[in-house]
Length: 261
Length: 175
Image (cartoon, rainbow over all chains, first blue to last red; front, top):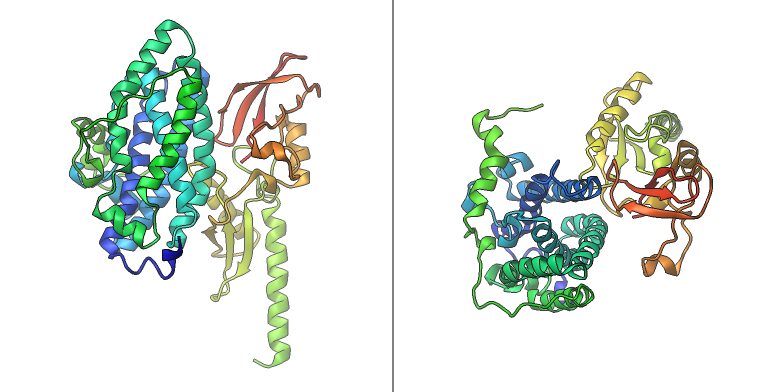
């Protein structure tokens, strides 16, 4: 943290924008996925829970996208960034775009990302970029609440019946390989960390692991082995699912350009 | 401008700020109309800008709260109706809003309205370990209540039930 003095100026603006988009797009894409649950939740409480979480994530994405647009200085608004970028320009973690599957799949994906975002926002609160620190301080409170919801459900399903345990362990096994990307630093991540704008991803991964392991133990779930394969959603290389999601998300603005309420 | 004129101008500015605060105290929250925006604790500053227009600093309760845009419009409309033309609303993110900022009056109004208010802001080790006690039922006052859902009808509320009178009730979430 001592390397944080006078930071922010050492990273070029386009790279700072890309860093913001990685955080913003993960929230935006996950919000869109959770929105697909509206009206389909297993019970009204879970329907509300997923929709409320989606709303918080969308709010966080808006704050970050608006900032990214201002920083970029090319006149792109939060809406232009959300609705008019191509798939390869989205820099979300690949995990966020994975399909909802059953309720267990959704809860596992949510839990893994909630725990990641909580660690991330806690670190970003001391970012050398004051605007990002402000947004993180707001988001961290909401994220803590999200993690409480997803953790409680993970324990209920993992430590539930043989059926729920088996299915949610299967969800965990399928989704786990996508978590490697979150903590695998590339050149941009390293530059951001050196400048004190964001955390060292290796340290973030260690903190995340400890938090995740504690809940998995309580949920009677087995932590899957590390996967050798890496995903690169944060560099714009996505799984097949993002294109379909964006087709839904962007349909209205693409067919009726500039439509507004 | 001489010193006296400056002092008069400043005093007039203070008067306008005080008058604007009174107006803001009458603007209801669109989701929980029993609370004014001042009760809710989201009005962070009232200032006269360099161009003479009022500038109101407002904190969102939740980043994605859909009421935020309505609140902004309501503030400008209420001030315009009270003779403050061209008032502006500025977002204030830091420090983030907390339910501790709901006024004592606001807490009382929430309870009377049937929404369990967040506990009064006292330093408590319970907050650290996440074991806030269940809220008392706003209808019958019983402490024998349970959580039904972490999320409720608006981002700022959770759903509880009273085991004594069996009525469900909203609780203002503590953040």
